[in-house]
Length: 44
Length: 164
Image (cartoon, rainbow over all chains, first blue to last red; front, side):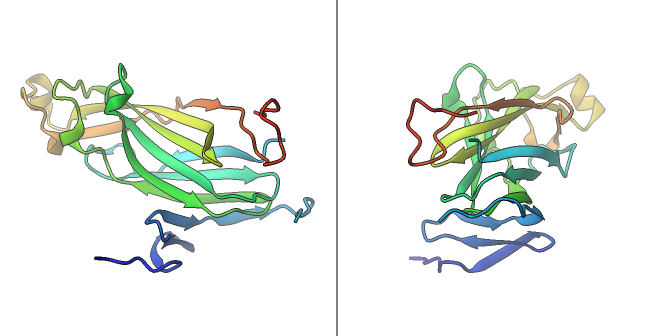
């Protein structure tokens, strides 16, 4: 039985791009932010 | 209001061997803070006549992001030849890049994929049984078919307010 730990960096496919494996087995990619929008506010 | 728009898709390895991975670089704009993850799927259409032959090549998730412009590389394996129809006409097929938010598809980018043998002799006299090892594929990157769909972006948004 294999167990995938959550939030473990498993692979880098692009410079500075990282992936982690979610608990349900799906791949989660952290994208590169090219432009951060400064005019929009975050609504909580 | 629409929260995410795909602004560009480029293919890193094209043309390529039929059995090599697909590598798409996807750029998207997020216009409002997301509360849920994005999901991207790459689907190979094995038979245009019935979607039972579709193969989901891979699925990736992007965590909820703040407003801004982002890019990432989506690498996915090729279709499994064993799952293709026996009488498959592999000359022309389609790959679909689907973008989803809260399990709703809001954008789809489709490309024709043209396939031919790398060996001129095999092109002239193709074997009865397709030899996938010797096939090359070319994605028609200059002619993407882009479709957007109205979805419910917010929990508060009622279903009669679908937004493109």
